[in-house]
Length: 505
Figure (cartoon, rainbow, N blue to C red):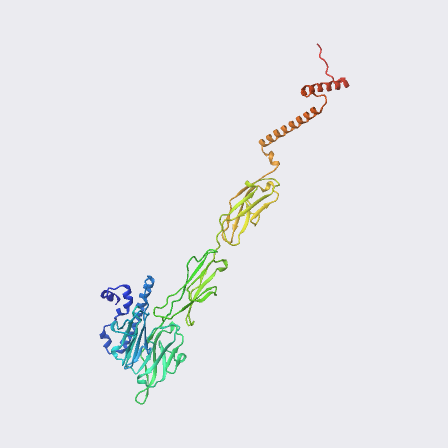
C-alpha cells in the first residue's frame, strides 16, 4: 500500500511524514457499504492500528536520520468514545503548535480531504453510517495528526472504549451502553474472553486507574436487556484496546570507557524514546544510581557527569525514568563500571655514592621513584640471583657495606595492578684485602712502599747531618765521609781484633 502511494505521489520524506496516514487505503469505499458492520469495524481497527505503526516508524526513522521533524498535531474527540449510536453527535478538536496569524485547519476522512475550517474543531451531528471511518487533521506548522477511528453502530448494546491512544499510567475507562438509553442489568466485562468485572467495575463503567501495556487486549461486555416484556442477555461487539508504551525502557549509555582511569571524568546518559503520540505536556524525570543508591535526581536532565572518579566509584550503575506523577517508572539494566588506576611507569633507581662503587664499611643508599601512577604505591627491593625481598620502602640503605653486598640491585613498584621494574644497578664494594687480589696492584703497592721508605731514610739522614756541629755547609757530603772514617778508626782502636789485616807484599 505504501509503495502504491509512493508511486502515485513522488514526495519528500517530510511530505510523507505530513501525509503518511493518507496513504493507507486498505479497502475501497465499496467495502464500507457492504452492510457487514463487523467487517467494517475490523477494517477500521486494523487500518487505524496499521496507520499508527507506519506513522511511528516514519517518525523514528526521521529522528534516527537527524532530520528536523515538525511537531505532530493532536486530534481528540468529545465525547471520547470510539463507538457511538446512530444519530448521536461528536466534536473533533485539533491541537497544534501556535502559529502567527489565522490559518485554516485541514480535516481528512479515510485519507481524503474533507474540508477546511477556520477553527480547530469539526462537528459531526446526527451521525450516520457513511461517517464511519478514520479521521485526521492537519494544523498549520505541524505534521499530520494521530488517527481517530469513529464507528457508528446500529446494535442494541455497545462497548464504548477510548477513541484516543491510551498510554501506560493513564486511566483506562470503558462503558457498556444500551440503545436509546435502555436500562441494563448484570453487566459483565471481558478481556480476551476472561471476566474482569469484579476488580474494576463501578455501576455501568469499567475503570483501570493506572493502565499497563499488559492491559491491552480484546474487550467486550454483556448485559441483560428488556425485550418484549422479558430480559434477554446480549453481548457487544469485540473491540481491541491498546495501552501504548509512553516511553521505552531506558538504557544507560557511557560516553567513555566502561573502565575509566582514576582521576578521569565519567559521563552517563539515560536513553529512552518517547512516543510521538504522547500528550504534549509529558515531562520525564531521571535518576541515576550506583549500587542501588541514588547519585542524582529526580531531575529533568537525562545526563549526569562525574568530573573525576576514584576507586570507590567502582560499582553497578543504572538509571530510572519516571513520570511526574510516578505513575510510570522504568529502570535500565545495571552496567558494571570498574575504575582502574593509572598504571605505574617510568620506574628509576638512584644510588649513592654515584656509580655504585663504595669502600668496605662505607654507607650505601638506594632510592626508587616512579614517573606516573596513581593510588597507594608499594615498593620492594631485590638483588639479582636472590629471591629474598631486601626491603619494602622507597629507599634501601646498607649502613656498613661488606664484600657480600656486591651485586646487581633493582626495585619494583606497584599500585595493585601489574608491577613495574627499574633498571639494574651494579654495586661494587672495595676492601683492603682486595687490594692484593691482583698482581699488578701488589707490585704497584710494593713500589709505593719502597719509595716511601727511601724518602723517610733520606729525610732522617739530612736532618742528622744538618744538626751536627762539625759539618761544613759547603761540603756536607765530604765531611760526612770523613766522619764515617774517623768513627771506624776509633772502633778498631778499641777492638784491634776487628781491624782488617794488611796483605803481604
